[in-house]
Structures are given as structure tokens and as C-alpha cells.
Image 1 (cartoon, rainbow over the protein chains, first blue to last red):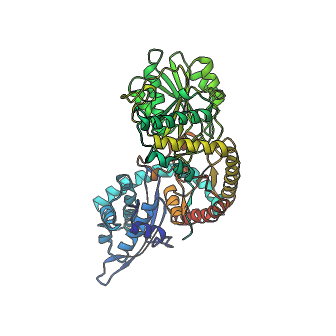
Image 2 (image 1 turned 90 degrees about the horizontal axis):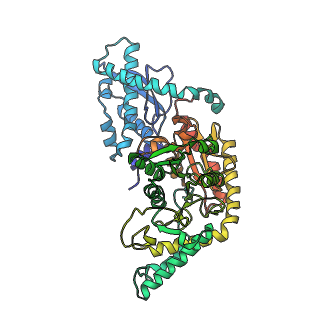
Image 3 (image 1 turned 120 degrees about the vertical axis):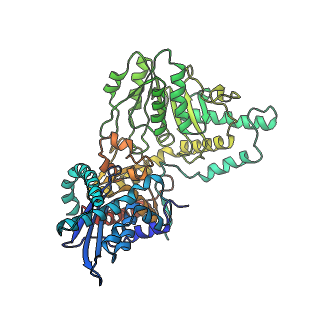
Length: 167
Length: 386
């Protein structure tokens, strides 16, 4: 059996919703301190006929491994058009299941990145619009922020390379 | 799809067809047990002793100084633990480098748990051991120094002659793991001043399941595997004659072709390194620019994750490897890359391309065409892009 399922390879080869949203309604970042992966996610929020807030558009960028890329691609396709409430209910287990292959234990953390970045983007949207933030989401935000800060410290030296690379 | 390009010869090599041919009789009609007295056994025994001569010859040793084992891991375990156990009355201090293969690192760690003291020297940014630091680290209780000949990840070749000289002067056993270098660059155990040397078959176009440990005559060493007393009592186990015969055919081929092949690979390697550094912004060479194996190229690229790179390259028909934490079951970046001073996020974007007997110039051209695109594509997904 190959290390990664067809579904993972499919998303990796052709990731959906890659990129940025100009003036997003919410954006979030998550990182993994263990392996050093970084994920950024952008949201455009709309409304459905019932007047519920929905994810109208979603885009992501990542410095991450194949599982991180495939997972986030999959998540974006799953939550696009869904209500925020539905989006928040997605768990990493749902993603792993949908990717059609039990991941080796040491790769499971890669699936958390996508879910975390989405939570952060929704948190950001709530904050900007002064909407009520649940206790759970607040707790998650604290946890994710802590990891992110540590990672940012690590990548600080990288900013100088950025110009060199992107010229 | 185009043919696959294998650029992971440092991981393992295909068995040379000439080697397969030499092995075949020993899997069928010449199947004897070297310990049997009848003609089947004698035939196998003869092949084994002839093999010992060939491998001894290739490194300038005597046949009785060669022990056959099943793998470089086993040879290295025997060298470290065998010397430690046999010489613990003299002292319990062992010196290694921080960039050894995991089988040496872990053997040393285990010895530590058994009451031995391990000093792990530092290396410079190229992975070279500092001779002065080694001098200082040696003490009365030191019984063994084990420093690899050439590194498996970054290809750096250590100053083995000088290290050996220091150990010889101080009367300390010196072991070197030559799994990556044996058959690729010249090895002379006397010039190198080594007392023990590990060589591996499957890194030089021989089969898996065969390796050797050179042990200088008079060296005090304990066996790890007890039984019927094979290999002068140092490694009991029915001898894997077909694998050893294959290993030896691989040695013969390398003896004949090493010089020319080394030159050929050096040209290809340098073309690859120059091409990558020129074509890919934010790319860096790991390991020493000159003192490196003729077949090893190792880079790190800013803002790219190694596992993604390896899988993407695989999808494009190129087999490579990485020291990224994402590819390791321990979720730790390569200890070698960290030891040469790379930060975890730099090791994150590392890529090893190792060439071999069937690497051609057009393969290098293809990699130079494809790799910049792979890196560019992954950077486009990266959040660091403006």
C-alpha cells in the first residue's frame, strides 16, 4: 500500500481554494510547533436565505507537508457554503475519515492545522464584528495563539530571506 | 509516463546484474552450510573464505581480520558494544560525533544507560569534527572513538587519517562507519589508522543482508550473538553465503570501476549542485563543498516543506529523500542537520539527492528542469508569499 491514499494525493496535486481573499471578513493562522508547519486561512462571510451567516468563500496558504495541504484543501471544499455553526463542528477525525486512509499516528497532528486555522478565522470574524464568542472557541483561540507565537519567533529570521526569494 | 529516476542511492542501491549472476548458484546448487563437513559444506566454506580475502584486499586488511555480519547496523552495534564490554575494566568512556548513523547514536545511548560515559563531539557547519576538541575530549578512561568516514545525509568526509593518528598515539581503539564510503572512495585501513571499520553491501550494488566489520588483529572485543561459533566466535549464525558472495562480487566491481565512476559522479554531482543553487532562489548546500562523497547532494530551501517536495518529485518520477520533521516518525528534524547548525525550520526544507551507477546526465537535466518548478509551486501555496 502506498503511504498516502489516492484522495490525499488528489488534493495534494490539485489543492482547492489555494490563495488569498482580498479584504477577508476573517482570517486565521495556525502552526504546529512539533514539525514547523504553518497555515493561513481567509474567509468571506455571507448570508443564506434563512438569514444565517455562511462561509461564502474560503482560501488558504500553507508551508506544510502533504497531509497539511491535502487536509486543508478538503476542509475548504467541505465548509464552503455551510453555516459558521456547521463549519465549527468539523473535527480532524471527520477529515481523516474522508481522506480514506488511517493516517500513521505521527501524521495526525497535520490534520489539526486546517481545523485550527478555520477556528481562528471565525474567531477573527466574530471579534471584528463584535459578535459573541463562545467559551469553547475562546479557549481554543488561547491554545492556538500560544503555539503560533512560539513558531513566529522561530521563523523571524526568515523574513529577511523573503525579499531575496520573491524578487 | 517517463522512466523513473532513482536519486536515493544513499538509502539503498539496486543489485548489479553481474552480482545477481554471481549469487544465483549459491541460492540453488551451492546451498551448503559452511559448518558441514561434506562437499556441500566445503564448497560453501570455500566461497566464504575466498570472499573474506576479496573484502580484506579492498581495504588493505588480512582475511582473518574480517567478520561478516548481516548489516552495517549489526557491524556498528558489534563494534561499539563489543569493544565497550571487552574493555570496560580499562575504562568506560567512549567518544562519538553528533552526526553518526542512528545505529551508532542509539548503541551509544544504550551504553550510556549501562553506565558508560559518552562524549558527543561538536561538528562545524560542514559537519567536520574538530581535531583539537577530540584531543581535549580524550581521557584516561577513554576506550573507543567512533567517527563515521562519510556522512549518510550530507556526504561530508571526515578527516579519518588524522583522527586515527590521534587515537593510535593515545592507544585508543578507533572505529569508523564506512557504510556510505566503502566502494565509493579509496579505503586503506592502515593509512587511515583504524582498528575497526564497518562496510555494507547494499550501499554498493550488492544485496541486502550482508555487511562486514574489519577488526584489527589483537583487538579485544566481545561477541553479541552467541551460538555455534561462526566467524571466529564473534558472530554465530549460519552464514548467509549467497548474500556474502554477492557482496564480494560487488566489491570486485567497485575495485575495478571505483576511480572512473567516482570521477563521473563528481562531474554530475557538481552540475546538479551548481544548477540548483543557480536556478532556485533561497537554496543552500548542506555539507562540505569539496570534502564530500562523489554521489551526494543535499540542500535546504527556505519556505518549502521537505515531505511535500519528496512526494511531489515522486509524482514526477524522481525518488529523493528529506530530513524534514514531517517525514520522521519521531517528528524531529534530522539530527545531522541540527548538528551542523540548521534551525528546525531550515531542516524542514531539506532535500537529499544521491546519485549512483545508473544516473545519467539527462537525469540531472530533468531534475534541474523539474525541481525549480516544484519549489516554486510549493512556495506559491506558502503563506510567506506576498
